[in-house]
Structure formats: C-alpha cells, structure tokens
Length: 66
Image (cartoon, rainbow, N blue to C red; front, top):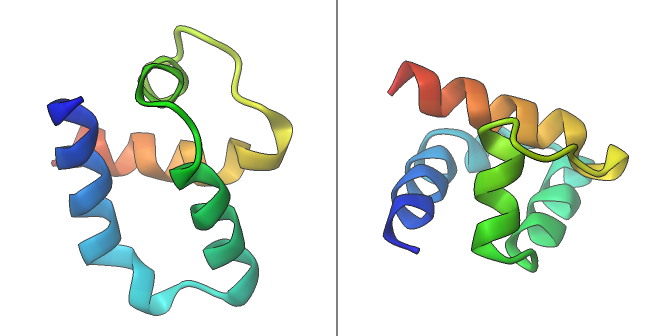
C-alpha cells in the first residue's frame, strides 16, 4: 500500500538510527505485519497489539506531524 510505504519510509529515515536494540526488534516485528493492519492501528480503527503499541503510537504521531 503506497500510503504505508510513505509513512513507514519517512519514519524509518527519521528514527531508525537513534533506536535502541529493543525498539529495532519491535520495528522488525512491525515490518512483518500486513499493510491493512498497520493502517488500521495507526489510524486507530483497530486496537493495536500490546507488543507494538508504543511503536505504533510513535509512528502515528510522526505521521500526524508530517
């Protein structure tokens, strides 16, 4: 999905270099999720899994500021 590529790519460019090992592990897990699920979590249309909540919240905030 093009929209998710734009959001995730921009977030990665801005944040990956400063992420901790745990945050990078969460990022890796996030990349294995489907685009429709990511979009639903970022837009708040679906509840985000607890393991990804902190990262999804940060990605969503980043997308709102972009």
